[in-house]
Length: 504
Ligand code: G
Ligand code: G
Ligand code: MN
Image: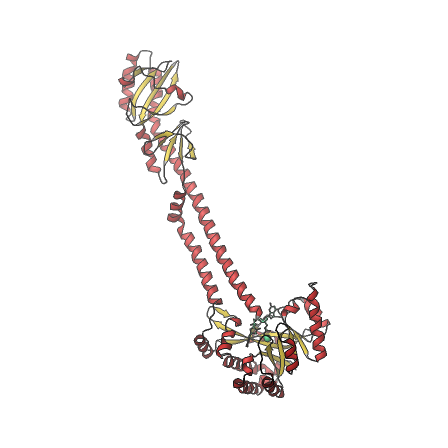
């Protein structure tokens, strides 16, 4: 039973682990794809935006280049040409010429004449963002410059002509046209370049970059809009894993449910082979399983409740009948002196149930199976037997019909010696926890030798439980243990499988 508590706990822990891993994987994938996808998308929008702005500037730039070759040193000669371009290219606001001292000496906008627009502070750039209250108060401008022989030609373009493109590509907070010192954002704000927009794409034609930033809110919005399905999928997987684990491990044992299950024959016998010291099949232990559509329920989830409610009595008796029924057709194939171990609750030895137990065993004895095997009644040491006299009386009756008595989980209870003293036992089943100690180097390992020694002195046979390795099997056989049971040989299995595997 103890193994089951451990197993159950492990089940819960592993289910929690699987669910946590699923959630962590889901979140990681969600975050990863959200971040990479939004960044990729932003990058491609920056590229598209840059192309749009390049194209929008191209006409004005062309005008500037064409004018260059036609201009003379006379402003009055140049004016018609400049005016021509301003009229021809809708984006152009003004066409201007500065002298060496950065004074506007010729302009299609007379307000600019004689002014120093301070464009020289942007010496190394032909693409400028400026705020000019003279041309269009309150609105930023884009300036394209060209230097020729001691003069500077420049055109101004309304900022709105340019930043209106940013709205086309806008998907996140803000895009901005970036020069060395300034940002022009999609709302027409001209603000200092303080590095606030770290994602950039550099124009390969003009000296600006298109920039943006992605805020946490942008990531969240994008993730929820585009990637929520992924997250939901993983959350659903985690939830269904938890539900399945819950269904498998929850305490299913309301008396009502068990009564129904008993009626439906849902408690079925699994059997685990028991070998003799030579490794030949010598017997088996019957282990009850509750089969549900979603899987199997471990005995320690329902046997304690079954014992409490008294249902363990009909459940055990039905189990014994099932075992007989299934083995009957091949009973003659059972090896000689084959024993079938049954776990019998202490409750079954109560005055009110002992008759029923004896009858049930008698009935079993009269089946074909019963005639070809020996019953081994296993009483666990951890259950309290109070009335030894009464119990011994029942046991004597059972032994009279050829059954044997085994103390199960030997060495784990509080009354090990009491049982030996007071019950007429035939077999000791050494608990797995002792077998586990073999070859571990633990000082307590010699307890195994002591139990074997004790059983030999008492002249009872010994079954070692929970044998998981060849080393343990060899150790135990060398010391005279009669029978071995454990995963090393086989796990518990349905009777059909047992028959196919061992009796055909
Ligand atoms: O093999 P398994 O893990 O099922 O056994 C777990 C424990 O459940 C056993 O050690 C045993 O104490 C208990 N158990 C299994 N089958 C029965 C049964 O038919 N009757 C009783 N009383 N206990 C059982
Ligand atoms: O009735 P009893 O407590 O002896 O039942 C034995 C229990 O030990 C069952 O739960 C059975 O499934 C389990 N068991 C049998 N062999 C092994 C084994 O080799 N390793 C482990 N861990 N459990 C085993
Ligand atoms: Mn047992």
